[in-house]
Amino acid sequence: MKPAARKSPAVRFRAEIEQAVADGFACEDMRLRLTLGDASLLKRDPSLAISDISFAGGDMRFLGVRIEEGGVERSELVRS
Image (cartoon, rainbow, N blue to C red):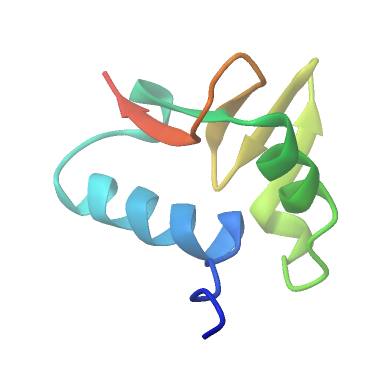
């Protein structure tokens, strides 16, 4: 039996960010801590709109949430 397909980082974290915003968190109060692999997948995701991901001021952001690449075993959305 094949293992279940994993959701792309874009799909997974879009849902988590939208839920966090619905719970009252601002994008500035969150950060995405991504594995290097998930960060790479997110950067190369052809399904993302140009407005979904940005690279400005030395920061990478997804849906307005700052991304921290590497240093984690499992990617996560951190709410502050």
